[in-house]
Length: 118
Length: 110
Image (tube, rainbow over all chains, first blue to last red; front, top):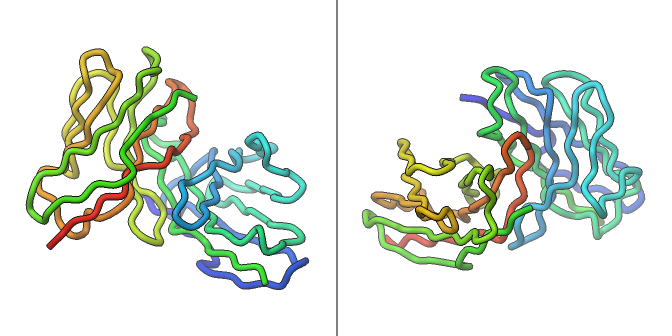
């Protein structure tokens, strides 16, 4: 089946530093990937749509200069949290839609990255 | 985005069927009904989707009301591994993004 990985799975950083999270589709190509964040006991909130070779589309209220997204290849999207602060601590999850088959009917999700900002 | 309403939590026993309801009274004619579930500390996984007709797959069944204003996810024989948060999501035809609601936290008792 289609597998999406994320790296790192957990990261702890100091306030003011930047953190990069990778999302890879391991056995399929994806022109579109999505980034979500999830606070404890809450639902997933869509942050942005990552499009290969073009700029990401951010949801309303998400700071694009704070959360930098780069989708440089058909198997890799990165999310960089710049100048992280404790309120950015969250569970970040990516997903991808395979190109093959042309169906939008199933997104494959990564296992998530838990970010803790001290 | 059309809104869905689900109970916050449900509880069932192992090896019994589970019926998870979802109301979507503002659904439009081209909205697909998707169900995903999220196990603890993991990313969501696809369960099933449908448009108008009832659907079955190896994981579950999806029963869609005739007026499409509600649907029910059916787990035929729950196991402890089915304990998760289940999300009912409406996806606009042609659109790719999913907007998650609050979901139903399902607890399975041994």
